[in-house]
Every structure is written in C-alpha cells, then in structure tokens.
Length: 400
View: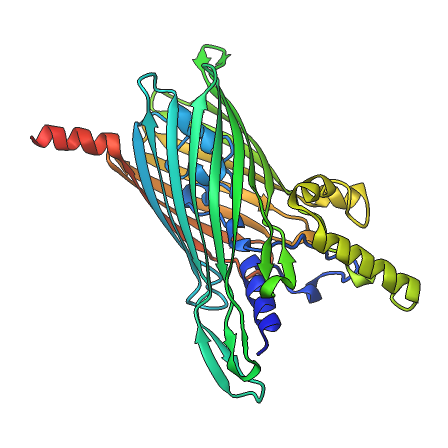
C-alpha cells in the first residue's frame, strides 16, 4: 500500500462521507480539509441536540463550541471527559477522546481560562510492500491541545480567544523505497463572542443567547512531505438559543446553529474540458493556485469559489436544531437534528440523549440515528462525565 493511498483512506474514514456512488458525480463536491477529526463533536450533550453549542448554556465542554461562554459560567470551575466510539458500523477500534475544563479567575467573576485536549485514534492499519506482502502495522492518530481566555466586555456580552496546536500522524516508512513519511503539525487560533440576555415574556423571565465562533484559523498541513498540502478546517459557527420556564423547576431550551467551512473548494477535473490542452492547462493552473493559496486568502475565497455559484455556496452551510428539557438542573432530556446537503457530504441524522446530575458529577449520553440507511455514522454513541469543582469543594468542606 503506497503512502498516498493510505492517506486517502484515512482522510476518507475521518470525514465519514457517504460513497460517491450514492451521489451524482457531477454535483457531489464536499469541501476537503486536513485533520477532519476536528469536525467531530466531542461531548454527548451537544451531540444529542444535533451537534450544536454556539449559544447553549455554558458547561465544561464549551471550549469546542464557543470559549467565550465560559465568562458567563455559573460555577467557578469544571472539567469533563468525553468518549466517542467512531464508525462502529465499519470498524471497532476508531475512537475520539476529549478532556476539557475551565477556571474562573479575577475577583469580578468576569474572566475565565480554559483548555482542552482531544485524541482521535484511527485504529490499526496494516500496510503492504511493493510486492504485496505485509509490511507494517500502524496506529495513526490525530491530536489537538488548546488554551483559551474569555472575558465579559459588558453585563451581557463576552469574547474569547483560543490558541491551538494540532498534530496529525498519518505517516509511515517504506523501507523498500527508502522513503520515510512523518507526521505534520499546525498552529491555529479561534475568536468568539457570546450575548446573554434575560427578556421578559409575559410574566416570565426567559433567557436569550447568541453566539459566534471562527475556529481553526491557522497554518496549512504538509502531508506527504509537503506534496499534498491541506487546509485546516477553518470554520464559522453562528447560533442562538431561547430558554423559557415551564414551571418553577422545569425549563425548555430551543436552539439553532448554522455552520460553514471557511475553506476554498478544491478544483475538480470534471469541471474542466480535460479533452483539450486548454482545459488541462486551466485545471492545472487552478490546482496550483489552490495548493499555493494562503489560509487567510482561502477564508475569503471560500464565499465565492463554488463551481456552481451562489447556489452551491448555500449548500456548504450545515444546520442544526435542538431542544433540551431541564428538571431542576438534575435531569435532562435532549433531541436534535443535523442537516448537511447531499452534495457536500450528506450527513443527516437525529440525535437523542439524556443527562443526570448529582451536584458534583453529571453523566450525559447521546445516540445518533442517521436518516440515510448506508451512513457509517448510524448508531453512534457518546458519553461525557463532567465534574463541578465548586460542588466538589463544597462537599469536601462539609465533610471536614
């Protein structure tokens, strides 16, 4: 198995797109990026609401969705551990593990620092040499570690910045060719904002929030010793949520997120007349431009470069809608739906989940039910265990 084939297989597995045979070859054109595992939601709460979280109530997992929410967190500190078996319908050794946490700082309760680390294992991959004999048994992986700072700029608005280190180890050595492929790394940053208000609806005080996050703004990845460059999954997420009381101890939250990759579309040969020298030259020029394009230029280019114009640009917007029922901050029931256009990946699924909280610890679980029968994402489970360090401190104080 050659290095290029191996990388292609791994990237396809991480993206989890449906086979192209299920789509129109002329219209199926997903945006291609490196480190696709950064697009996988880490926590069960957000997953059960259709993979959304830009404007939901702050929790220990806000680092992935919108770090600026931490400035409005009720507890002084929290930490969570999430585990997701990935593509279990295809293999049984791919998984995502995520550790996230935050700490409120300062005497005015308006600042927070937060961090997370995620590890995505692609399981065991067996390679062969040039004659077809077994060569190596590999365990490729991707990881990311980040640190963020958030601060209230007013009573109702906060902003946050995050800095991230990313490493993708998809390389291996080919001794018969005297070739060694190493992992590639990149640095990225996020910038985000969060609006938190309490409007009155009738006699009830409700909560309306709005959040935005531009994530993974950073350097490109140099796969295959720089011969196969890849953009980071730079992403724009906008979201809103509205919470209203049902009774004294019951609330219902409705939320919506819209999401777009800020990555230019890679040129395809099918969009050019490859039977003529002019068409071949135009394709090669477009491919060279794409490969040499800077990440910042790519962000702006991503709004105008779809081959089919504005219609295809709209297809690149993913949408999530979800709801959460909350009983006295102790019991939660959630549901949601995620939609991605069939020409951009066709990830369409329902999310369901529940959570239980006992002052110090909370356990959340989610279940994904894909609407497409052939989707490898169907029946995906996630588990998240969260700890409220304020509650733990209070509990230890009472014992003393």
